[in-house]
Length: 567
Image 1 (cartoon, one colour):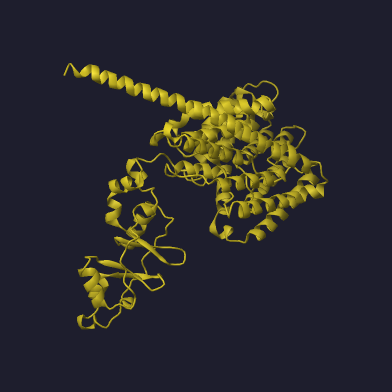
Image 2 (cartoon, one colour):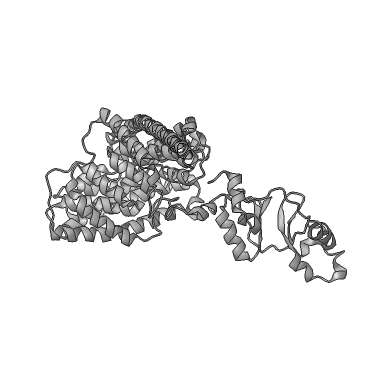
């Protein structure tokens, strides 16, 4: 036993050196990711803001009002022709990739299409945010680098550069490295964080910020003049803002998720574009007539600046709040591509301004900034990122304590199931739960012997029930169309002497739920429980038979993991 101790010590030292070397390699690649993403975000920001949107802002009002429709058209063409029918999601694609299996790849063609579509949408005046394409492009760059240097990563570290790239995207576009790192690790979950990814995310966010700031400077994105203190009145105002923003974010997320629903998406694209474009044109005219500027257009930074002017009355701010929310919904519903981060920030700022005026507070900026943190934190369920974001982008840490209180209150009011992020999960899954998040293909059997509809019950019994010892068999016709499930229980109801002449189609059960290839294992289990069956037929959209899932396949979880490579 004593002789083995030096060997054990040597082995541990060797393992420590390997881990240390791998950590250094990871951080170096995270830094490279940050530099690359910073350069990409610079290009996106320049093309969108300094080229397209600046040119639109110099045009007469009529052209400014019509420009968003052109942007929506450009976005649709990019998604359909370049992206081969890609969806308009950006930030959500990062969250989706985070939760996919380790070998999931982000296809570069839809990535290019989505970035170009977002430039068209926002550059021509759509009311969405640049953080959408920034975080998405960053995650694509990070995932690509990780695939290129996959030998430096273990399977458990398969998402490190994906997260680092997303953090770098947010850090650059907002010049807020800490907020970028926090957002990237908070947003995949509603009540948890991806803490394994913290260090690479911080390194990538820092280098991305330095790359962006080297060209754009280090001035805060939303500078606030002066210094601020706070007392009990301000604390009470912050809590009130938290309540308002929690309720507001809940309504905002409900509206966004409705626009993603099947009944809305089923409306022809050109119809949605025409309706959304007309609404955006009308909102531009209304805001220009009432507020002396088309503040409905673009991400909304100018709307925040306008709202913080104490000369503007509270009812005009209320009007601007309604106009901005309507513009976001019109842009999003019409298929525009961009982020919801800044729309949430703008809505929170305007909510804070309305509350500050209603309470008769002199320090308007305090509740404006607190509203930003609370609405953002509630909308995306990222409270830490919301607070740090306003501290970094305003350059004033004095807002942190009121913002923390407001954000905590908003989290309580928004509700556990509400978020603007489509693929966000409640928390990290346990070892067993992760298995039920596998695709249904992990447990599906495709090499299945089926029975034709015109086979007799006697043939069914001889070949399938006796020959293969199966109690349920899919009924599939010559065109591979699924016609139901033949089960032993139905045979018992037929007289014995009629088995030779009764066809299987007459006893096939057509009421059982049919699975889809896009389902998860969890969906299959729930469907079998509802149907009180241990066999689920899987069919495509045209009812062509694909395979079956059985409860015994689902229960062999260890074999499933071995087959799919999930640990």
